[in-house]
Length: 187
Image (cartoon, rainbow, N blue to C red):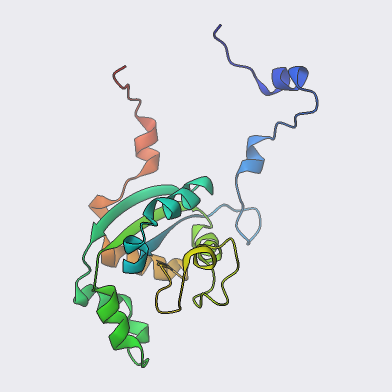
């Protein structure tokens, strides 16, 4: 039997089931009633790749409702790492950070959604694994502050800079354009 049950039909069949309005499935930004579509850079570091956590991390972002705009696995060139971590160049751990980040592959991703920058930071947790809350990516998977699995942009401006550093604009999927095309798949 074919057919689509609407919200009112579902309420009639299952009176105790609350079927939410679609407006409750979207998150407004903290600024009030306006909606901010953002993009952010998320990168799995060599320890996350080595420990085979790519799928677990992607699953968390997808379950949160964010859209994957682009993803690539690469051996990061030191020139990109130097520009990416330019604000840490004067820190004593900077040389070890660059050596570590270039020691193995990383998976760089661009995620899109409402308040994705702030939400991503909350999802990954505190930089220091001993202070990261259980349920966050670092709280669940990180073993040490120097092996904390993941990076996420810390601001909208930082995300824009980092995305431009790691990806060419032609690589990024435009979901609005993609969703307007219907496609059929072979059975």
